[in-house]
Image 1: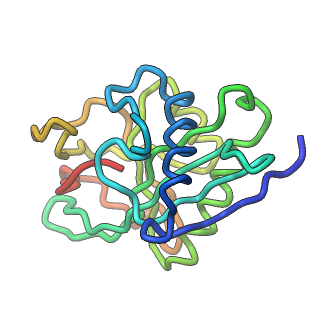
Image 2: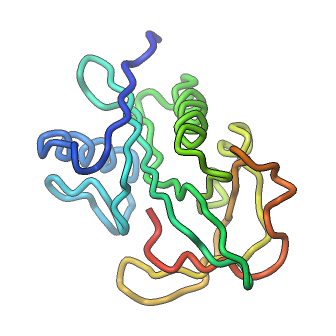
Length: 182
């Protein structure tokens, strides 16, 4: 597979037609999502502030969103790059494109001078992130759901050491996202 053309674009700079194309990719990547990604809605809950997109033949084939935020872990405040909407075109899954996407995401998080990346995911994809250098963290995660209810997430929480060692991640206390997931 030829290497895609990569683009890192701020949310305010993303044109409407790009949102439509990304929504189509996210519909293919998340066929059972409650968000559905209708029309040009290329987000599910919180809108990312930065998008990393891989294009092949001018069509998006890989995507992830990043939102810088400060979370509370116990009584501590922690700056993170909240990562979400990670998708690879289903026709290209298993080609190594997802691994390249995660590698590029780590570089973007570093350029943003973030100590950690953070994400939540289902158990069925946790191995993909582990292979990309992400580590499970023990903290229960409280966040606002897309339907505006506050919940403690029941899936997997993971962190990526970027500018701080993973040993600096707080090992106790609930993580309060204080907002919607990306």
